[in-house]
Image 1 (cartoon, rainbow, N blue to C red):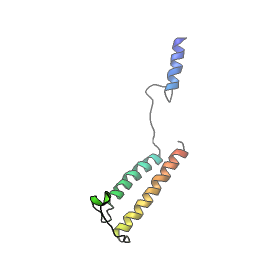
Image 2 (cartoon, one colour):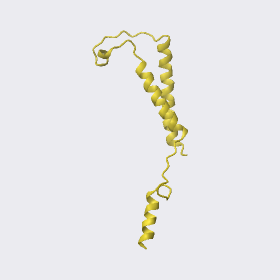
Image 3 (tube, one colour):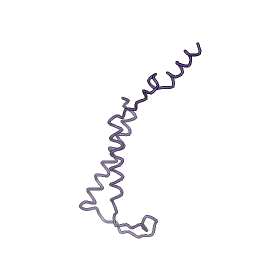
Image 4 (cartoon, rainbow, N blue to C red):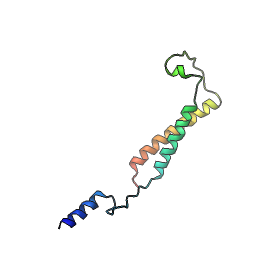
Length: 97
């Protein structure tokens, strides 16, 4: 009787009912989230906007200008990447595999 209770408890503790069969499957949303997070981090880091390290600490008076050329393109890609990241997080929570 004690062995049956122990085996039932082990089945409850493991996801599939078998020890050693705890495989974690990633959906396409997980891959999109990871990829867009890495890309967005890279894109944010390469956007300088003419500021040095002192500007990040509040020591610079910067003149606001319009974005042109590659600055504008990188900015727009960063926005799209942020949207993809947000949507993949939301869809990853809503849609269960």
